[in-house]
Image (cartoon, rainbow, N blue to C red):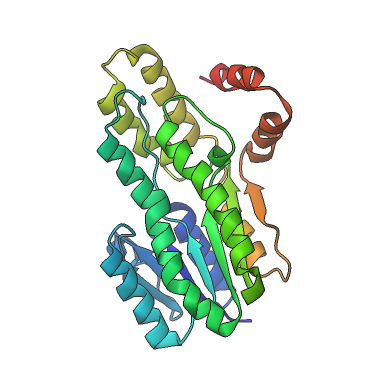
Length: 272
């Protein structure tokens, strides 16, 4: 069944791969991003690019209104936009931390609020939220990023219970290591924030490790793995509440669940 789908963060990585996957299945996809020009390579008739910064609520409202005007409904919202702010708790400013939450949680939440009335009216819909295995675990210097993902996990669970009676499903995606350039993006900012301070020795080791493991040339899984996982959830009559996928995802979550904090600390630090 053809669905009307909105994807945020659709100009690269997981968002772009998912847009291509869903278009190939015949769905109508609206791709939202601050970098709308980077979606110019989509030539499919069923793809529509929207310029949207999820921290700009007027842009969010304009985008939702456009889709409703053109399609009359939104069947699926894939909240995928996000980024990682890495550095020490001591050295990251509170303003930087607030912006991390604005992008990874509050912008997502506002977009969801605007779409929910339309889904309630049609008594059908799905909200898919990109969390991370980082929503269940932790790494050094990722305190604010992990805090947003831990928050998103709990927020999504509450939303699932609230919207069930209206036929709206809420799904959490928990990617492992994915070749999205995530490591490349956080590498320089981490060093700029904390690379010359009191934690510099460990920071420099961690930055290099992240870039090697999670950059475009890293050892992670291709974004298509997550795209197929999102497709599986969207096309399922009874989707799971959570899907963990990608390199090391299930193994790390298993270790986190069944082993003590001190053992998990050692596992994480052994990878640096």
